[in-house]
Image (tube, rainbow, N blue to C red; front, side, top):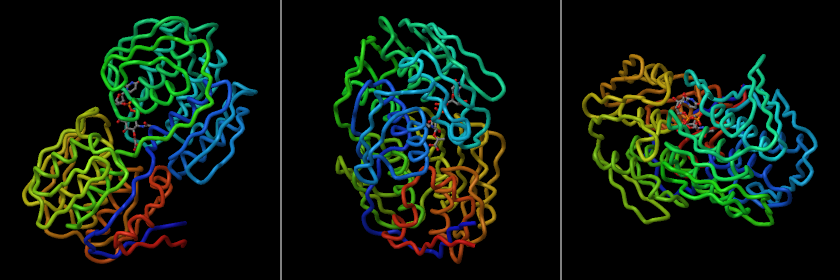
Length: 419
Ligand code: EPU
């Protein structure tokens, strides 16, 4: 078993470079199934979710050449099966994008129910509603999803809930459909724009991504034959911004799009931190104990749920009592029990948690319940006095590239140890 051992407190200082966005990359990889040919993807994050996705695509018949650890050339001209490997697809959430992509490309798909972080109920009714409106037949049975369609036909689709996954999945299924699809009440996250940009680069006709109405004019074929670079990871950048504040450090975060970070920047300034926005890099520093705050997570451009646990560490150490209201997931406060082991004073009731700020956190053995909880514990361990041992690293490795190396380069005393 592996664990991370962190010795603190260390104010994080120096420069860190942000990798490609996990949640864009895990949609762009299945989107290559829409291309009857070859394309190159660059700036892929070197994380386990990407490696698993590449293996799944290879099992479907795609040929992948690794140009380096962040770039692949993929040939999807010969897709030989419509059955995705169940053991792999149930390992993570984004396997559901194969439904939209394969319905478009092959008119059929059998895939395991998606896995991913356990954050409470994660229904996919809006995905299914979208596929059915486009003309597909979808059955969910014995842990598997079967979807079939002769020729999908574009139509208006109103999303009852703002959903990242459903917006991308319906977009994937509409790209090769006959006629026009209009997704109303679409999600607006940067990775939705990135997937649309990728598809348009390959020959799709998608307009309005990044607004709440996306119009997709179906095309006959995606020609591919192009190179696309994945957008920088907004959540990884936000994780380091909050790490700078929690440890009272000074970080220059490079290779990010600061426009995507506005809700985090605003909160950091509100609690007394400092931010210098350079467009493609951002400097964050904090010299005093942060002030209390009230946070409500919301779909983009609101404060992202995927930075809620990292912000929870900052507020655990703030002056006064803070409140976080989690409006996206039912169970995203599991990390608070771990922070309490480190001396935090947090009470969570349902989707609201109260953080009575303490002056110091202390090292303790802690368990990562999900990906972002794991990142929060790394930040907490760096800010805390003494030694913190973090277990369940498979969650962190799914979504953060070389987390300990990146933290070490900015001063953290962190080691991966095999027990
Ligand atoms: N929802 C439904 N029905 C649906 C789809 C969603 O009720 O058909 C609800 C969900 O239960 C949730 C809300 O709508 O309450 C939003 O869910 P969404 O579909 O937007 O989430 P997702 O696509 O499953 C993605 C990210 C998550 C991130 C959320 C919210 C990927 C692979 N995952 O999940 O990322 O928290 O959007 O921004 O893109 C992470 O990276 O750590 C992570 C969990």
